[in-house]
Each structure stands twice: as structure tokens, then as C-alpha cells.
Image (spheres, rainbow, N blue to C red):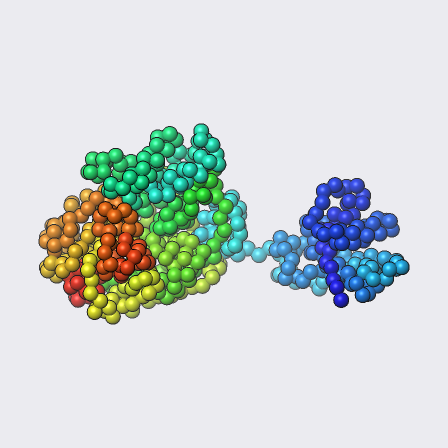
Length: 575
């Protein structure tokens, strides 16, 4: 038995077509079109009203079943599970029937059209039900000017800040000029932040050209926040130069609770530490945002991570995020928000919260987010004068899953090659011999990261046994290494402690060897060595040589391992 389906929209179109009220066409094949017209013509001839005539919204989709064997058929409403949520609670159209006289050709005739009787629903299930929203959903709601959103909805959001850098900036600029015109102006010159930071201190011509392109564009567009560098031989001669974009964004006051920050870098999610939605986007999207200040985004569902307990003095936020990634895998949070709460999170400094959010993308996360609190507001006091409005998850908010972690039971961790979710206890890798240690990047190159490493070196009093590279994230961090005294050191600075331990002198602030880069990039792995690093990725070739092996760890573990030339649990020196 063959079947064809005609929906209510096609029926309504056919009726209007016959009455001369509709000239457009709808998507249906010839047979369906003819059958819809036959049915509609009969209702007009018999002067019968269509059940769809008085509807102000789309009705439950009826099904017209046409049998090639029988002389009659019926239309029944679609299953309630397919009814659009917007139609829920609307009055149900009355049952109706359309009788068609039998033709000579008995097959494929429509005899009746009807909707089944629906049982009356109780009031408790028919009214609109207001559900709570998560932090991320609330931020999307504000940015899209919609009162309520749920995961999976696609909405146009107004962007508060767009960031790009020397690697992706030229591509985004190219898209902008191609689509909007060579003489087009950006949507808001004060909401765009351009930061050279990746391949800066190199003689590579292409890398230098990229910096020139973003400089020319910034001058052309009069971009307010372009942190330029012209003298690559001495970064201190460039007062506007900052360093790693994700840390500079926070230090320069571009991170604010409740806002949307997009950047052409996957670790833009770092800014979620401030209670805002922050995520990485591609060059095409960035080019569109440059011209419009808007972007179409899908509302992500949220995974909630509740971390409680007093943080042991041998753990850092890097250990927490490695624990989570090892638990859910590198795809466990794909296109999901990762919300971090609990007494442990509340006790973390802003820089530690940034570490936590920085690596959510290594779990596939769309964004990481921490509720803003007194710690957040205190950090922002001297960073920004712009007003902001924090948001918090409702008690009735729905989370896709919730994970609870007792941090008092955790131990120092590493991620073994070649994946951030290849989790292992540091003490289980004590036989892994190292060739070098790298302390730096947006993940592990902040002031507090170096203070933590200095604490281990100070407790040991020994010298490192492998080359140990120190790369501050920003110019401010570099200054801190030479000016801030390390607690318990008798007034010594990080730079003094590093020198006494035999580390390389702190180098120019940048992304350094985290992402490999040109051959002359400082500390790049140009040989198949084994490196323990405070960075965020350990894929083959990430730091240079494709045969290199990278162990990811906290600054505590990095410093302890540098002292032994083996992967080492920092408790050996801290206790």
C-alpha cells in the first residue's frame, strides 16, 4: 500500500490559492499539490470553512493519508510530542470532517479529514512554566534581548568585546574587508582589542608581516585598544606592548562580569573566571563581528562542577582542571558550558580561577565560568571604571550533569603525552626522565604561577638539573618577577630565586614556545626531547618537534621536576 502525506500548511495554501488569496508557492511535489487542491476545492465548492481559517498560529500539523488501495482515508493530528512548544496551551481546533463524493477512479480519494478528540488537561500542566536559567543562559538572554532561553536555541547576540592577535588578526581583517569593503569601518573601535603576542621575538618575515598588518589596520580604524610593539629587540622600550592576550585582557580591564567576550583564540575561555561568557571563534566569525558587533550563537547546556574542601598546600588550580579533564575526557564537554562553584572555587584567587577556566577548551567546552564575588570585584577595582552587571544561576536552573569533587582527596597530577586527558598521578611517573622544564603561557605564566615555582626552589635550596625556561605572560608579570618579594624568602624576588636555582633568566613576555612557532622562537623544542610544561596542550608537535613528548603539570610539579630531572611530586620539597 502506497502513502502520501499532506500537512496543514499545504492544505491552507491550496484553499487560499483557489480563493485567489495566495499567489506564492510552497514546497511540495506535483502529486501532493494536486491532492491538496482537490481537497481544498471541495471545501470551497461546498461552502465549508476550513479548520485552519481562524487560527492565529500554526495548528498542530494534521496528517492527510492518501491510500492507493482504498476509497477513503482520514487525517489525524500529529503526535503531541511533535507539537511546537509555542503552540502548547493554545485552544485546540474543533474536530472536522470533509466528505468527498466517490469518483469513477476509486483509488486515492479523500473521504474524511478529522482531528481526534483531545482530553482536557489539568490547569497545572497547561499554563506557561517558568524555569530557571544558568549563568551562561542569562548572559545570552541579556545579549540577545530575549527574556528566556534554553539550551539549543540559536540567537543573535550583541558582542561586548572582540579580541584578536597577530596570528588570526590578519585573516579576520581579510574577511572583514572582503565582505564589508576596503573602506568599511568597524562597528565600534572601542570594543575591539588587538594584541600582538604569539610570534613576536623572531626574525621570521611572515610573523613580522602579521604584526605589521594588524598595526596598519588598527591605525586605519583608529582602534583604541591596540597594544603595539615596534622594537622587538627590547620589549621594555614598548610601553604599549602587553604580552599574552588572555592575561593582558584581564590586567587591562577588558574582562567584566555578565558580558560577552569573543576572541580569535581557543583559550579566550580564560576570561570566564570573571563571570562572563568568553569563547574562541574563527576568523570568518571575527570578520563578521568586526563589521556588525553581532554573532549567531547556540545556547550551550551547562555542566556544573562543585568543588568543596580546603585546598591542600601542594595543589594548584592546574591540578583541579587536569583532574576534571581526566575524568570527562577531551570530548566530555563538547559545546557545553562548564560552571565551577563550591567552597574551593570561592577560595581561589582570580589568577587561579583563570587557570581553571583556561583549559575548559581542552575538554571540548564552549566556555568556562565562575560566579563573580568579592574576589572578582576587588580585582576589578583598579582595572575598569565601566559598569557591569553580574549574573548567577537560578536555584531552579537545569544542568546537564553535576560533578562533585572533594579536593582534599586529590594529589598532584600530570597529563602524559599526547593528550590533556591522559591523566596520571605525578608520583606514578617518577621514572620518567626529563630533558627540560618550561614555565610560562596563559595557563602557567602568571605572577602567582612563578611565585609557586619559586616557593619550591626556595624550599629545596638546590639547583635545577635540566634547562628550565621562564617565560612571563605579560610585561606586568615580568616586572613582578623582579620586584615582588616571595613570601617567606626574606625579601627575595622570583628572579633572584630562579637565578640561584640555575634557571634561565626570565625572557621577553609572549606566548613563547607554548605553540611552537618559528624555529628561532625562544625555548622551542627543535629536537625530540621530553619536556614537562605548565602549558595547556601536549599534542605531537605542539611545542615544536613532532617527536617531542610533553607532560602537562602545575608550577609546583614543574619546579620539583626541574630539581630532579624526573617527573616529581612537589610534596617531596613542600613537606
